[in-house]
Amino acid sequence: MELKQRRLFGTDGIRGVANSDPMTPEMSLRLGKALTHILRQSKSDSKRPKIVIGKDTRLSGYMFEQALSSGITSMGADVLLVGPLPTPAIAFITSSMRADAGIVISASHNPYHDNGIKIFDRHGFKLPDQRELEIEELMHNGEADKLQGSPNDIGKAYRIDDAQGRYVVFTKNSFPGDLTLDGVRLVLDCANGAAYKVAPTVFQELGAELITIGVNPDGENINTDCGSLNPELLCQKVLDTDSHVGIALDGDADRVIFSDEKGNIVDGDKIIAICANEMIENGALRGNAVVSTLMSNMALERYIEDKGLGFIRTQVGDRYVVEEMRRRNCNLGGEQSGHIIFLDHTTTGDGTLAALQLLAIMKRKEKPLSELSLIFDLYPQVLLNLKVSEKRDLSKIPGLNELMGEQEKRLNAKGRINIRYSGTEPIARVMVEGENDTLINEIANMLTDKIRQEIGA
Image (tube, rainbow, N blue to C red; front, side, top):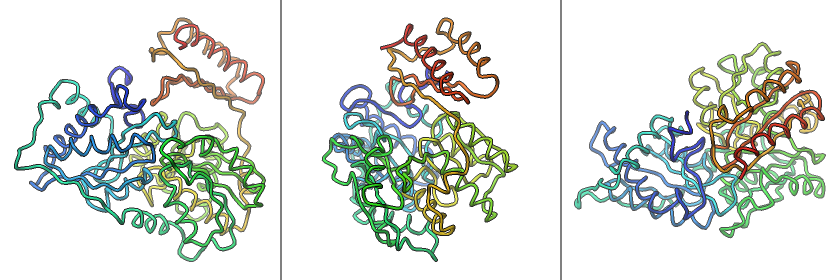
């Protein structure tokens, strides 16, 4: 249903190949005009709206930054340009500067030829589906093309030169004031992305001995053989340098994956459990629940429920996690992929901030990450990605529902099957989880083959 309704926005904004529909300068211009029009209509005063624009390090970011700025200023709003900064930094700057909205130009973990646009409201939260649909309607019914500001009411664009410093201070303030990172040697992989300047500064100023990877962006090397989706180099570097921990961000630095001191990957599910345990011990966990998504491992669910807490699953996307956290007054949630949200500190996933929370636990308990990550054993899980020619309603693929039902019986209530489309790419994702590696791989391949027969690209 959602796929039919939403023509532009996916699970995390608008995304596609840069300079190809829908990610074109023309679309960005209309988007800027439509967003500004809606903001002006909803303002209770006559003050000129302010919109923050930040980006990652992709070459195409300049193009979209200028197009968005043109659309916004033509409608009588001002633009605050902050340059390359992490997605969570834009959320923070938007809120702290009392702007009316924030825009991030980034395709997150995607390769450099892709780009995307996501929007925050004045409080630093991602726009809900309904507001995105309002913007889409303006853009698709032709109204956005007719929108025109007064010649006497054209906005201005300003550079916010101290935006990086503001975010560094904000992020450091999430780390306990009685602790430092003195004596901690860590490897930091910034994926040649948006955090390449600010993240190293945060860890260095807190006292860490830092070895860096992916801090030399050239506009095309973002996420290339580095970052949270490609942590192999990080793990090897941790071993080669005898470091205490490795931290890998993605292109827009809203997610984080770790390597322990032995070179083993520690994903978001384990980090959520470690942080939940610490917050429970300190009486700091609110809402009597932890929020995650359909993709989180069953072992995390059982661990949280064994603690007497609720484990709430949402559809995939950190903004859906945040929405549910706010509804339930929870302060911890996240995704297996490394989006981890601490609502006591911030409004969205923040890889650097999440890393600081984990490092604080390591310092307090004086335990290495390899020991902390023994908190539970993950269920075997396989995830297969299939490029598709169309995102057809899964229930309309002949025989797929019946096949899923048959395979779920084989798991004997000791596993899960989840099939969904990527919200940002033409990909179907088949996830199977259970106790037996051979069985879940067999089931995953069977389901993938069924989808490939019908809509494989």
